[in-house]
Image 1 (cartoon, rainbow, N blue to C red):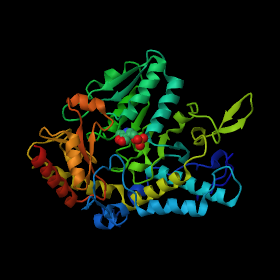
Image 2: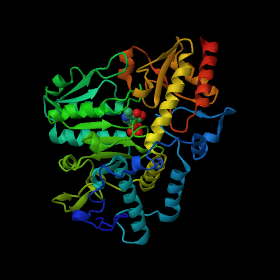
Image 3: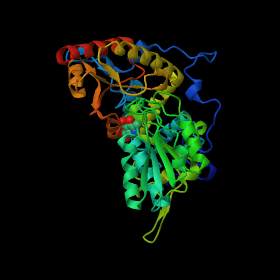
Image 4: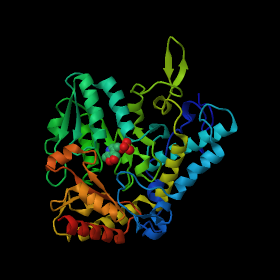
Length: 451
Ligand SMILES: Cc1ncc(COP(=O)(O)O)c(C=O)c1O
């Protein structure tokens, strides 16, 4: 049992004072948008060179070249604030959470639960106990697929995903559909890398039990009209899971404003540690779902005859959690809040515009997806002439430039465009125009060598 008083809010163990935090602030006064801004509410221009100094790895060299790290959609680098928080945890607090009355266990519990409140504030969850710690986006989606599927999916039903999903938002649904003899339906995408929403209503009417799609595509960078799709699904009483793995680091994500039922993201794409992530769920949905895994922490009482389950969020957090990860994620969120997501988005949009301009000057450059910088986030997926993405990636790597090549765990998109894969340069707040110039020069060198 976790009958300790937890987090700054000073809540107790049960009822209103459940340990993961009771009512949480809504709408007004969110630190997500409130901080990182100047006094007059205008966006603040970020000092990117100063930000870069927070990330020790950005000062390193690769094959004698200063590192240009453009694989941020795969994972972001970590600022000192995160590294220090995790180091301090192991040096001064390390103890198992929720179970101990001793000092260190209480401190570990307080620190982890404070991170939960930080995340709840960040995404504007109504309650901190609607925030579940998981291993990442993949586990969050698997959790909902398994638990929602077990409770609500029947033969003949369907799950609706989009044609631009990461495999993590396809395969868990395929698995549960197969088990329940349900079908997986797909919202198609057009040549421009946008969802074709004309047939959405007709699809929603045809036995769909849940809609799952990504806010931002990891392979194309497209920002999907999440609010519109969620509202359409709700008109038919259908819940929606939003995969925010590629959105949460680039733009404000407000679960109440979106009115989304479930939201998943990974810490490691948000400047936090690997191995930890978030599942947000509306209380009314999470309370209806059966637990995902059995074990410690998710129970209230256990006898050999019967087990009763714990309240949210612990019902979905079986076993010893990744305490250092929770604390690291909290530090990452605070770091991002201090910069201000609106400021980050502004800086990244400018960089995206610059990057597209310099890359388009390269002969044979072909952008895959939407060419409008305002409607994309983070990702530039491209091909150059007939050069295989893998060869391009290798030559860039030899020049200290880290990009990703291949299908980016989104094979159906590559099939849609009839291509084997792309080269993907993905941006974070610490990238600079000078790095975009290095990328363009690196591509030109590859064209000279291979073209
Ligand atoms: C859109 C999207 N969804 C899901 C995932 C899976 O994230 P993770 O591997 O952190 O669970 C990724 C990772 O690249 C992603 O980009």
